[in-house]
Image 1 (cartoon, rainbow, N blue to C red):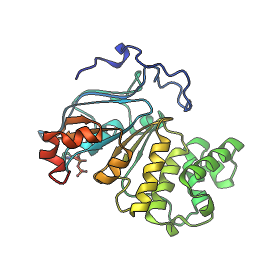
Image 2: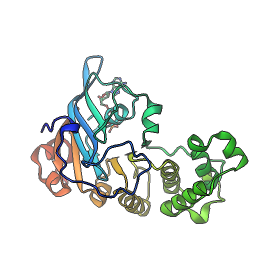
Image 3: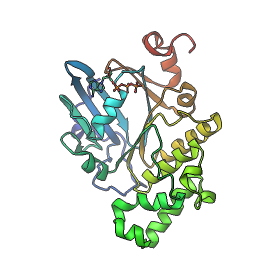
Length: 276
Ligand code: ATP
């Protein structure tokens, strides 16, 4: 379904108040969070993305599923500026063309990516990890001398409350469980208050209890920011999904609620199989 360039979209939904106004230059007034149209990426002639389209509303929590090699990681790589597409459009909000921007520029625009494995500083405390995550904003010197503004400290406190690690601030990150490390890394990304958060397989390696808590965390975070989650764990997807996009061979195979997706014959054939 082609929608036309984002600047031509009609104002279907006008957000009167936007709580996350940290990146005011991202125009989400027409509810466009991310707009991907006709994206093609080839590696040595192989099409990892093949005219892929994706339209995510601002504040939406979108799940992206698909078999190994479907093109999910390649899509994230293009959005974050790691991979240059052969063709296609990627807009952040309805006004920011991401194609041609560097990874750093894209991060500074308010797009954060959480990779599958947690990358926290194991020997630093939970608090230090969060302080270090404010580097980009405050500079290394401020971090070393602990010169944080009251706004920064408020932000750290807020993030600690969100990720549920207030009682572990003095613990080395290395002593946390796998799930807690994942939450800490999400917290580190949140310290920059991203407008779009890309999360790769958050439930991998988690206990069921940790996965449930992660599902609650992501649901809470959506709304004020757009979140795209890649996940293979269907129980996890079921617990968070409003709308699911199924990728197959670099294309969008199906899109809809989990109930719709589960009944889709093409999806059953290429991905979910008979158990669903
Ligand atoms: P998974 O669920 O296993 O992570 P995926 O859906 O993320 O899979 P991608 O990693 O995007 O899939 O890969 C899509 C296809 O592109 C695969 O066939 C992969 O082998 C190929 N591919 C990805 N990156 C490269 C690269 N740098 N060079 C060559 N081929 C690549």
